[in-house]
Amino acid sequence: MEISKDISEQKQLTNTIMQLQKQSKGGATIPPSSLQTQKNNTRFQFENIVFSSREMALTVEQARRSARSRSNILIVGETGTGKELFAQSIHNESPRKNGTFIAQNCAALPESLLESLLFGTTVGSFTGAVDRPGLFEQANGGTLLLDEINSMGTSLQAKLLRVIQERKVQRLGSSKLIQIDVRVMATMNEEPLEAVANGRLREDLYYRLGVVNLVIPPLRNRKEDIRILTDYFIRKHAKLLDVNVEGLEPEIFQLFMDYHWPGNVRQLEHVIEGCLNLVYDERTIGYELLPPVLKMKLQHQERPLSPESSFPYIGTLPEQMEKLERIMIEQALKQSDGNITKAGEQLGISRQNLNYKLKKYMIIP
Image (cartoon, rainbow, N blue to C red; front, side):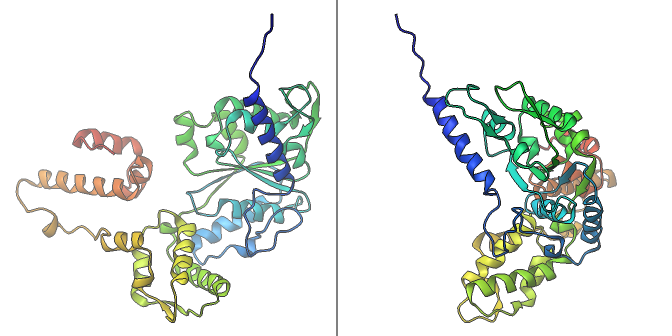
């Protein structure tokens, strides 16, 4: 009699873990850039944050102050606002600046693989496993950034909570506890309390990580930064692409100011870089250089609602007010891509109140 088992899947997981751990030692989670990578695997400092608005000035000041301690930090911001830029800047301003900075995207790996990568493995923990330190051990004396923490499974979040509380890590398959000294930072692209309510983030982990909370404002809420960011990105990419461009045409700058920029600063940089790739002998960026998708969105961008053009004055005042309210709710949902929380903030009402009105008018977000 023979009992056999297919171990091809375990072997594949083992090879993947080995590759990822080799990359993490060299800081492979940080993408290449024109900025020079420092010895601690970072590229950004607070001097690299470009802004002129009061909102960003307050956020940067809060980040600078939080750099002095060893407390955990939760950085909240929409996609493209520069969360890792803040995390690296805090690390380089902190007493741990000579230690290693390691970043790991929690949404990029399945839970079993992420657990092995974070905590490490020992011989015999699974088929083909070897003694390898996890990211917590590798970041000892430095900082570990967990990007998109709300994408991590709740069972793994419970194990992570224990490591953060005890400051000890246990490799998979081992009974030995290893003392660690790691500052943990985490990032999220959604409201933390909403993630807790929807079961994507454990409440106890939120309070443990959110000792210091930093909220990075989206670009649409600090449009005075668009001018200085645009000039910075034009200088940066014009030099790399070897073109000579002075700036935006006045009407294009106004279009940029009117656009709501769902991709935030990252989208703005990509638009500028895309335009400069099409430059031949132009000295300024005009409408013809804009990407097609942005052209279409700018052409059909919503204008301020005017009662004369939206609906006739037929019916009573309450009926007209309900029509106006319905139109404003539909526009807010459209601009927020169906996100009820953001639409409520734009309308100046609570999420619960907006949900009531959605049911009242039978609007499907």
